[in-house]
Length: 304
Length: 304
Image (cartoon, rainbow over all chains, first blue to last red; front, side):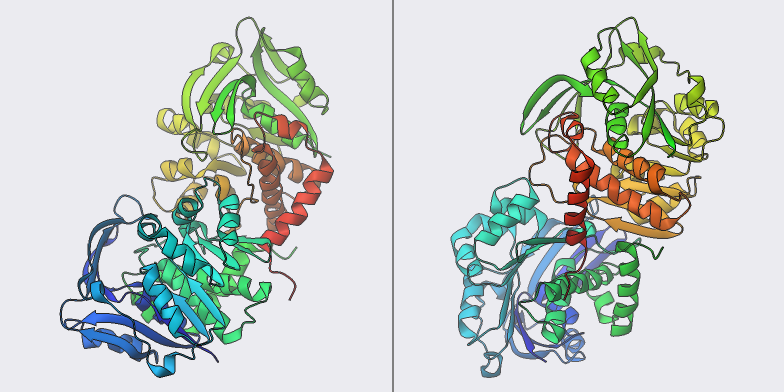
């Protein structure tokens, strides 16, 4: 079983949704990704927290055997994000971002991380993404996420790292923006021509849209009636996607990539059912398998 | 092969989209529905046009053996609608609606229509929908569409007719509004409790969401890169859905309803590729079958 290296944010979120409000809860792309992927595989985390980060919050990752050797603890405050979904569950309004110790983050990979086969560059500065990529000796499969902020401010750096990845996972608004297109079909083809072998567009409650091996693979999300908090759904998707591939997958095989998408969708569908990482914390393999069976019924013809 | 009765609007549209602008082109729910459904089956149309309606525009339906015996021609101007999709292809902004001869429309079914097995009540005043429903002696399968305007102004009449139908086809915004819900999963369950055996929510480029036999069936739209004009996509979907059921289907069988949804999605995906009903006019069975094969690849796992 291959190991997955993830670099991303680890922080505290304050989130308001129609279901309520939570303060200073576990957040950040690396937390969501690691909890999701660790259901399938061993995860090595690279990131930074401040001296205020609670040890009990690290225990949640440790319980899943997530390797935190690459987690730097710096004097100062942990990264914080505050957002609201009160008017629209499909799109967060960012109320505040405090980079804190993340501002001077200089990722340094522990020796044993450098041989990781799978590498996920979660949504951080593309210059840092490249920095991490350069430290891994011979990655077998590389994934990248980004956000509007980097498309606006560092598009050339983003394109540079994008040219080196196997899969580009991003949301629909970002995909249309980076491709400068209003149609998602032509947009993913443009993104694909920037280098990544596969493009996976995350569409929230509408599921995902993959372009790979010159083919589209498109399926909806699992129907969830009780969406509590969409934060981290995209990183949970990426965690399920990478987890599945590192455990079972032939990364060059279309079928494996398709199955990875479906695992991503299933894990993400749990993630949104509670605030913060709570649902991922409570998730186990049996729940994933049960929902997978239900999902296949939703997207397949009934037996005649 | 059963006959399908449709009552709906027949009119002229003026439409602006990012692809251009067309004036006084063929429009109205009954036109889109009849052209779509006539690929599969015989369609009887009930509707009204003014004395200005061009005979050449009726020929398009006649060429498809659509029965126009129930089409009333009244002194005055035909129904006209004008809309723009310039800012958002997913939602039309209505610029103008002129009811004209539609204002005093009093549907009268020709004798031979009264034995129609399949009945589609397209988006018109729910009082007229009920009026037509009452004139059909023993319908085997009834479908209904509506719009925000009727949900706002005649919700009690709408609920009355809704309690008598087999399938309720409507778009996502309308579904959430009528159910007074922000989640589509719980919304369709509420709509289903209002009477219809099945609820099919049309989601534009995101496909459809059916709730039937206590099960969800959800699939995306066929990926179309060249969306020219989304007008009538929902009525084209309904036409493919009804056409398929009337030709092949066991209307009480979940599998048949699922296949009907997919036919609806395929026909709708053609409809949006040109202005007005042009793409439907040019559509034939071979094109439907080819795209069906492509669609199944998009939503199914590749052979390992």
